[in-house]
Length: 289
Image (cartoon, rainbow, N blue to C red):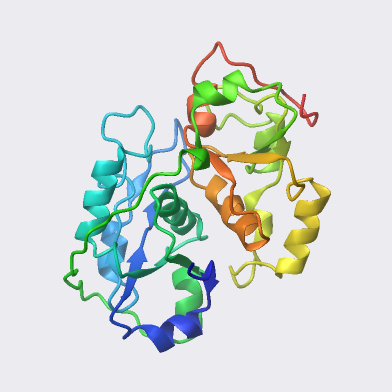
């Protein structure tokens, strides 16, 4: 098992390791002035500057289901394995993932690799902003990957579908965690097709996990204390995280893994899929129910 997180100083010292594959997993999600969010690939900003030797993982393209209604939907295993192998991710490789923003695109790719059965993957804490803040070099030189064979086996327990969430709303052994901001959770803003949160879900905003000044994760002991208070580390429970489109939810899943809970599942469709179906219930206000 690879460490779940490494510092920019560690990565700088190991950039020349032959088995190390560094991946930029950036997407952009501009805040709309009118209408829904429209995701954008991070390929252009990757080409402008990235960590030396880093390759780009297209979460909107190669690593998504082209036939799905929602962006970033996990593709079939064969499509993912082919795209990963082309990047040099596979047998004998260690992977460090980062992005250019708040880290949740990186944790999405971290989660997706684990879902597909690949454990030798870690997150660069603080991502590209922390790398640059430390004074380390960036480049616009795009390297050629060395292809590998990806042979992972899927872990279906790490993902949930809309149908599975809807069928288990009364399951007291499962804690459903909404990781969006409080206003969106309470249904005070029109971010998705309908307002509110999934019945029974608690709120743990993912943005509270990071130091706002450095962009790195807060001390693990602080996070573990919050997770314990929410019951997320209780033995015998199952934890499922969700957000708007299955991206930020992986940030909480990664933090929980750091706290010792590496079995957290992600609702891939999240609020985009749930709120888009008028037959599914939503709750307005603070109460989980």
